[in-house]
Amino acid sequence: METTRDFDQIPVDELDEAPSRGEVPDLAHLSDEARSRLVHFIVTSTLERGVAPTAVIALYADLAGEELAVRYADRRFILRELPDEWREIENRVLDLEESAHERGMELVVAWRRATGVAMRGQDPLEQLSRLAGMPEGRPRAQRSIFDDPEDLDALDDVDPATLQQERLADRSPDLFDLTLAAQGKLRRFAIEERLEHGLPPSELLDLYRGFELVGDQRAQQYLDRLYVDREPPPDWLDLQAEAGRAMDLAASRRQDAGRLYADVLRTSPELEPIAALRLLVERLLLRPG
Image (cartoon, rainbow, N blue to C red; front, side, top):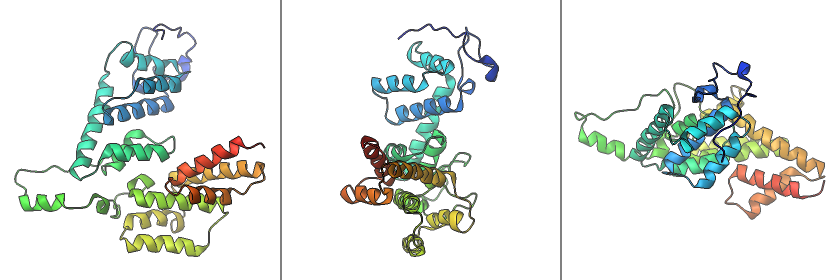
């Protein structure tokens, strides 16, 4: 891989205080998309305690076309430097991992599952913080040596999933604030509602009732954003937009996307709802138009 490049074509006038040719860029100099991809890589490599060389190659491929982003990656992989902000992100990830572990949660496992179904455009650190139950800006609870040991033991006995079912008082929940089980049910509902051109009201009532039976107030709070406040969250809109693209693709092949999606789930019930939708799209692309 070449270590010198011609940077004369960089649109400097479109960048905020972009570094000159001889300077090395920081994350703040990069586009939102490139910065997100780099932070996602740092989070993953920290949780996984390293990544395969192919992951580095894939990162460079993702950053191709943005010279400043490639130069930033070169700092780490060519010049063997560790930028301060890179280390700060690693430390933040380790803190979140420790916090999640204290509550009996393996954050790396949750991250693998979440990134398989996450929509692009979401901040990786914010996603990770929500998975860990520590949204950005919320101070981490500290244990004091003066705390009652019996009280601390009681905290250790709390099921992490139960904590994710409590209503949020400071803001409205997003999908990543919910339990994995609730996320799966809501994603499937969102996709099927779009593919079927709407679902019977009884199915919505069943969804509410199911969350009520397990005491999941936060999932009910999420549904209220949709059907009470009439303000669909961005992650819900992303799901339905992706389902809409599948509908258009199926229609171009004179197929019914709702029926095809049901067939995918029937034959592969272990698939996550969004994974099933993407599998459907792949199959449609292989069919002649």
